Amino acid sequence: MTKTVVITGANRGIGLEFVRQYLADGCKVVAGCRDPERATTLTGLANESDGRLQVIKLDVTDSASIAGLVDSLDGQSVDLLINNAGVYGPKGAGIGALATEAWLDVFATNSIAPVQLTGALLPNLKASGGARVVGISSRMGSIADNTSGGAYVYRSSKAALNAAFASAAIDLREHGVCIGILHPGWVETDMGGANALIDTSTSVTGMRRVIANLDMAKTGGFFSYDGSVIPW
Ligand SMILES: NC(=O)c1ccc[n+]([C@@H]2O[C@H](COP(=O)([O-])OP(=O)(O)OC[C@H]3O[C@@H](n4cnc5c(N)ncnc54)[C@H](OP(=O)(O)O)[C@@H]3O)[C@@H](O)[C@H]2O)c1
Image (cartoon, rainbow, N blue to C red; front, side):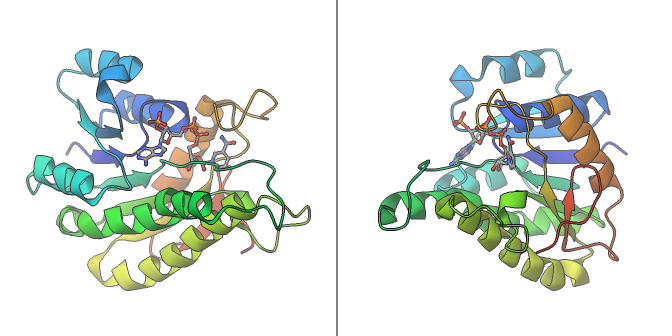
C-alpha cells in the first residue's frame, strides 16, 4: 500500500530533500509551505509526480492554516508526519539583549507548532495503524551537549520541542504512533550556511533510515541522522 507522508517547510532545504526522496520511494507526499506560488521547485516536482505530490499552503504557526490542511486531507490516513519547518531566530544576541517577542516567535514555530500539528492530525495518524511522527530538532537542543553557551533562543526552542515530544511519545503509544526526535547534522541549507559539514542528500538519506527503524522500543528517542543516540 502506498504510504502517505506529510512534510512541513517543504519548499527548500531539508524539507525539499525529504519530498524528493519520499517521492522517489513511491510515497504519496503532502508538502506544506507558506507560499506555494513562490515554491517553484516544489510545484515543478508536483507537476511531474502523477498526482503523488500535493502542495498545500501551510503556515505551521497559524491554527486556521493547520485546519485547512486537516480539511484537505479529508480523513485520509497519514503514515508519517515530518515536522521540519523551523527558524533560527535572532543571531548573536547575548544575555541582557534578548528580545522577548522574537524569542516567542521562534518558540511558536520550533516548539509549539509541531505539537499542535501532531494533535490536529491525530485522527489521520491513528487511521494509519502504525504511524510515525518526527520532530526535526537539533543537537543544539541538547543540554548535556552544550559546552559553548550562547544561542539562547534556538537552543531553548529545540530543548522545548524535545521535552514536548518525549511526552507525546508516552501519550501516543496507546494509539500505535511512534515518535522520533532527530538531529539532521550540520547541513548545507540557508540555515546551515556554506560551512556546513554535509549536504541535504546525506542528511535525509540518514534520517530516512532512522525513521524506517523507529519502533515502540525506540519511541521518544533523540537520534542523529547517522542513528547515534544524542544525550538530552
Ligand atoms: N541546516 C542545519 O544545519 C540544521 C541543523 C540542525 C537542525 N536543523 C533543523 O532542520 C529543519 C530544516 O532546516 P533547514 O536547514 O532546511 O532550514 P531552511 O533552509 O532555513 O528552511 C526552513 C524551512 O522552514 C520553513 N518555515 C519556517 N517557518 C515556517 C512556518 N511558520 N510555517 C511553515 N514553514 C515555515 C521555511 O519556509 P519559508 O521558505 O517560507 O521561510 C523553510 O521551508 C529546521 O527545523 C532546523 O531547525 C537544521
